[in-house]
Length: 272
Image 1: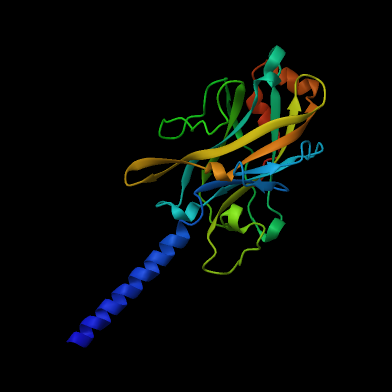
Image 2 (image 1 turned 90 degrees about the vertical axis):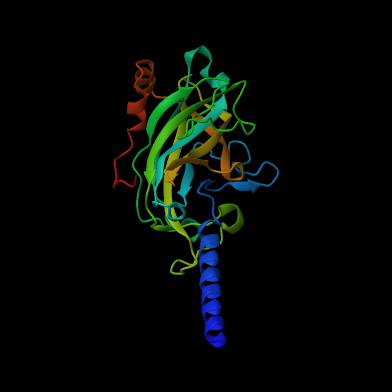
C-alpha cells in the first residue's frame, strides 16, 4: 500500500514539475515586444536603438512586432496597436511626418523564419502633446519617459495576433542566437515585419529625427480584458533619415486622407 502511495505521489510530482516547466517556458517571453533590425540594445535605457544618428541612411527601418500568442488562454492577442512618438516640432507650420508601411517577412534574418506576410497597418489617429495612447481596458499607456510635453504621436492598428507559425524568444536575451526550429522547447508566436519609410510634408530632407515605437493591447482571460504592452525594456528608438513627402501625399494629408496613405502598400496574404 505504501509503495502504491509513493508511486502516486511520484507521478503527481512529475506531472506538477512537467506543468510548471511548461508554464515557465510559456511565459518566459513577453506577451508583446519590438525589435528593430540592425539596432543595438542599450542597457542604460533598456531599448533597442538604431544608432548612430542617421543610421537608416534614407533606407526603410525594418521593425518587427512580436506576439507570444501561445501564452494567452484563447491564443489571441486582440486589437494590437503600434504608436510612433516624436518631437512636436515636426508639426510646426501645419506640417507632419508621414509613415509608410511596406509589409514584409523576417527573410531568415538571425535564423528567424516567418512564413506569413502581414497586411498593411491602418492609421487610427494623431496624438496631441501631453496625451497618451489608450489600452484595450481604457487605461492610458504609461508615460515611461516618452509621452508628455513636446511629444506628439501617431497610432496604427495591426489587427489581432493569432498565429503561432514563427519561432520567438525574449529578444534582449537570445537575439541573434539562432532558434532551434523543430524543438518543442522553442516558443512560437506571430512576427509582423514592416519596412517603414518616413517622409515630411515640410518639403526638405532632414536627418536626426528621433522616433519611438510602442506596441500594446489586450487579451481575454477569466472573463476579463487584460491589457498588455511591450515592456519598456522591449521597445525601440530610431534616428531616421527624413525625405520630402511627394506633393500627392501632401495633398492627401491636407484632405484628411491619411488612412489612404498608409494603405498604399501592396496587399499580401493577410496575417491579422
